[in-house]
Length: 271
Image (cartoon, rainbow, N blue to C red):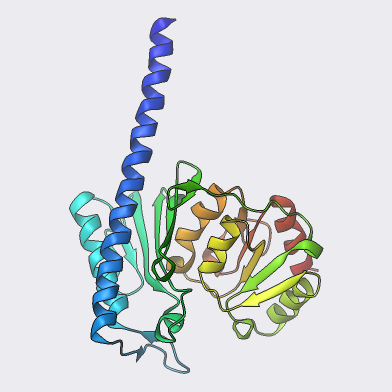
């Protein structure tokens, strides 16, 4: 019996140590990305256009931050896979994979707005196990490990709101919705208390901190959402797709302060 108790204690201590180690490594990732971006901002940012049509900016700050993140991960975990927005995938067969968006919200960055973020997600067997939403312009970093989300080391929780009529809604840009998607979004928007646009990943951070209650988006890619899932869940929120499941591959994401609010939003989207 004493051996069983000791085993449980040892397992608990082991889990605690791993959680602390992971948090310290996320702090390292935040530091190297921030330093790389700051250096490029000091030199002056020039935005190149990645889009064939329209404007999808990328800067040397995006590239430098991803190089710094990749180098730090390679040093610490050389067998892990890495998927990044700017430099693609390394070791796609790896069970454990890091997902990087070195600057989420490059448009905000080049416009001098503070809503851009460094996103890092950690997946094991396809499951989102940890994540970081780092907001350097606000000196604010949210990290979720072992099912708990912290902002600058302090626990955060969603508002817990459950009714659309009480919900503060956000999406990055309503122009990202087309056709029936726009109709669906508008049905939800008209039922919510208020709506704010243009926050990029910062909106998901604000769901985690209880300041926004609902985010609805479409057209997201893996590097856009992989970091967000663990953070929203770690703060007690719910995040899934537009159909009530967790298949994010279509790029349609709903993040909510509670499961009840998520269900209400999905039911309205699909009405």
